[in-house]
Amino acid sequence: YGRVLPWMRHKDGQLTGIAGPDAVWLGTPVRLTAHGTSHRAAFRVTPGERVPFVLVWRPSHLPAPDPADAFDALAATDTYWRLWLRRLTYDGPYRDAVARSLITLKALTYEPTGGIVAAPTTSLPEELGGVRNWDYRYCWLRDAGMALEALLRSGFTAEADAWRGWLARALAGRPEDAQIMYGIAGERRLTEWEADWLPGYEGSRPVRIGNAAAAQRQLDVPGEVMETIHLSIGCGLRPRRHLVDLQAVLLDHLEQAWTLPDQGLWEMRGTPRHYTHSKVMCWVAFDRAVRLAEGHDRPGPVERWRRIRDRIHREVCERAFDPDRGTFTQSYGSRELDAALLQIPQTGFLPPDDPRVVGTVEAVRRELLVDGLVARYSAGGPDSPDGLTGGEGAFLACSFWLADALLSIGREDEARALYERLLDLRNDVGLLAEEYDPLARRQLGNFPQAFTHVPLIRVAYELDRHAPHARRGHPEAPPDPGEG
Image (tube, rainbow, N blue to C red; front, side, top):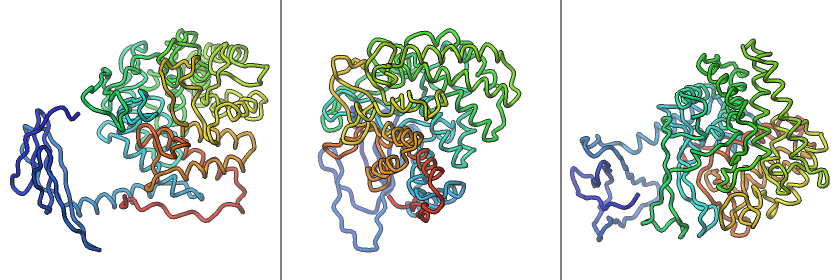
């Protein structure tokens, strides 16, 4: 992380840097000249000319790698992605955006293990100059489960099956020891520390390595896992015996744990609360277990699961709903709103036309919109549950959730307009970060963010499903994966 000054030398036409266990080789026909602690070059490129730079890392105790041909590698990369995209089943008007987002999810997958990271970066700030800087280079069960839904829906079953294998290995052990996130190979120790010698992106400190949220209780995660298992079996993937066993032990643990407060979907660092979204996802866990048992002849104490499911439903409706405002609230007894409540109709907890769902969508639009985009919750205020100072940008995934919720309650024109505005926020190669600053008109947070690209894919499918056939435009061509 930039602490050690490496030894640099020119050898066999390459520039080599070595520091401790790490080594890099930079190969290029351009002449590089040392200037203090850096190497620089000035050169001219004419129209049609291509100048390669090849940077390779490997452990410093190994010999130098064989030189790579940049143009052969580029051609092979282009061919790989074009062949991979042939499996894409979506053929609607937003095909370019869907294809770009699926490529992003695949690129966030570590192929040797099947783990899917939330983002490839750490500490890109949610507020410039602020402290909301987190390390997202890990595999959240929630985020990966949502990514699997998008991949399965689009025809990419091999990636889904690989992730199920990663899941089974990562969760091995006692259910009470399960974490909400792991390393790309299933590592559990993700100790958070600060690289205090780094100035941070545009002065945003601290720069954090590791993530203390790995030790949090987040009760929505078992529901996300159960939803993924249910979806994968529904899409025709063969049930894995150890995942069947995993389901049983997760539910046994959740039967006792669902009544506890937790840190919630947004990994609040304040006092644990009874977050509404967490309770709804506990309902999802037992509901999907009942569905699997009834629809796929799976063993289990179905009547007990059904009783727990119904008890959770009653409690949420009684303790998390504000009848005066006609909306669900962030947690039991709170008046705060939370954009995660927009997912209630997606889960099947209540039908989209239920007045409580419609009222919640309206309340989010009334209280959490920032220049037409959605904030997660009221961050940084005196009643903020996150335990942090400062604010943050509008949350892009939540804005896609609003488009989805508007569509579900019959407001297709508003949903489509919001969705297309969100597509316009993508950068020049179609990528989105975690958040967006409507005032500065720039993206914020770690980048690119799987949690943002997943609902982009979902809403494209939902808009296409709701639109009359005559209104559907001609599908745009998929992006050229070799560009950018």
